Image 1 (cartoon, rainbow, N blue to C red):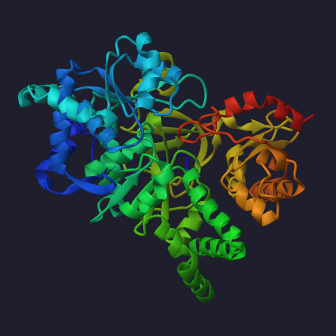
Image 2: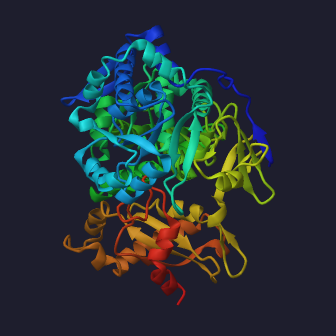
Image 3: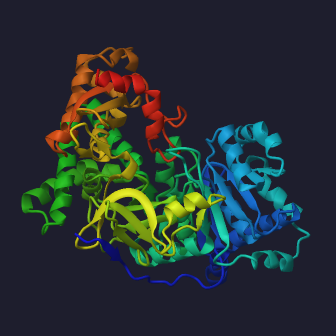
Length: 598
C-alpha cells in the first residue's frame, strides 16, 4: 500500500482567460459543428457552436442592461435544461458569479442561499419555482431581478440587451480571470446548514482540460455525445457540462427522469454519467421485469455470467465455456439492456457515492464500462477517476492528471491540486479546518491507496461505527450490498456504541407490485400491510445474508427492521443527489433504532 500518489498534469493550470474562452474557441474553430441539442416541439434540434455563442452573448448583454455588474452573484433555480447551460455561460460572460439552487429546494433553503451569497438576481425555470421565490422575495430585497425560463426569459433578456455594445460586453468579460470565482455551490447538506463552496475559473478549467485530455476515448471520440439528467446544481453534472462544451461533445438535457428511457433512446448518447442509485435502478428494474415474467432464473444466470466474464478480463480473459455463455446472453439479455440506454453507450461515469464491485463488473460484462470516480464539491467534482486505459473495478481510480492524494495517519484521505476550492464563502473558520496551510484538503473520507495508485474508499470518517466491543465498521459496504436486492429502496446500518450491528430497511414502491405477484400475494396488499409478512421478511433476510458475506462475523448485520415508508428527498431523508442524510434518519427514526436494541 502507498501513502501518497500523484499523476502529472497533461495541461497546466491557466495563467489567463476564463471559461467563456471555450465557447469562443468553439465558434472560431468549428462554428458550424452541432455542440448541443435541445428539444423543440418534441424533437431534438441541433445548436451549432456559433449559434450557442451568439445566444450566450445576447443574454449576457441583457444581464448587463438589467444592472448586473461584474463580481455580482446570480442564482439559477431550475431542472437540468438547455436554458440552464445558456444562463451559466451568460452570467460568466457578463462578469458574474453563478449560484446554482436545486429546483426542489424549499423556501427556507432558497432564502438561505440567496441571502448568504448576496445574490442580486435569479433565473427560475417554472411557476413552481417562482412560487417558492415569491415566498422569500421580501426577505431577500437585494435579489431584485428574476427571469422565468418558461416565460421566454432568454428572448426577453436578448431584446433588453440589444443596445449594449460588443465593446461593453467584452469589457465585462475581461474582468474575469482564472482566479475569479466562477460559482458558489452550496453543499447539499447531509449535515447542518449548507456551506457555500467557492470555485474559480482556474479550478474548473484545470480539471476540465486534464479530464478531457486524460480520457480521450470518452470525450474526444468522433461523434461523442452525452445526455445530462443529473442536476446542474450538483458539481458532478456541472463539470460534465463544462467538459462536454470544452471537448465539443454533443450535449443534451433531460429535465424529467420519468422520461429518461425514452430520451435515451431518441438521443442515443455515447456515454452517460449518473450516481450509483441510477445504475442500481437499471439493474433492479431489469431483474424485477424478468422475475415478473417468470424469467428470474435466466436473468440471474445472465447477470452472474456478466460478472464472471468481467472478472475474467482482469485475470487473462474468459475461457471457452464462459465466452459461449456470454455470447448467448449478449443476444438474449445484454443487447436489450444496451438498447434501453440508447444503443450507443460504451462508457458511463459514476460518482457521488460508492458504486460497488458487483455493479461495476455487471455493467462491464454487458458491454457498458463504468468509470467510477471520486471527489467532492470542494474539489470541483473528481479528484480520482478510473480511466479507459487505467481501470480497477472496486476502486475510484487513480488521481486524474494533475491531482494528488495521500492517506493521513488516521486513515483520512487528503487531496491536493489546482482543482481544490478556495474555501467556504464567508466562513474562514471552516475553511481553515478543511484546508491545511500547504494546500492539502481534508476529505472526511477514510481510504487507502494500493501499490498501483488506485484509491479505495472504505468509509466516511464521521460515519464509522464503533461497536461496544470496539469493532470499527464502515456502513457503506453493507448498505451497498443490501440495496442490490430489487425489493430494497434505502437502508441505514446502525450500531455505534451498541453490542451488535443492525439495520433499518425501506421497500422500493416500484418493485413491490412485482414481489407481490412473485410471492402469490393479493395485489391489494400495501407496503404498510406487508412489513411483517413472513415471506417479505424472508426476502429481506436473504438480502441481509448476501450483504453479510462482504464482512466479518463481528461486522455482520444481526437484526433488521423493515419500515412501512420510504426515504425520499421530499421527506427530507435524502439530498437532491440521492445521498442519505444519516443525521436526519437517525433523529427521525430514533425510536425504531432503539427498538432494535431493546
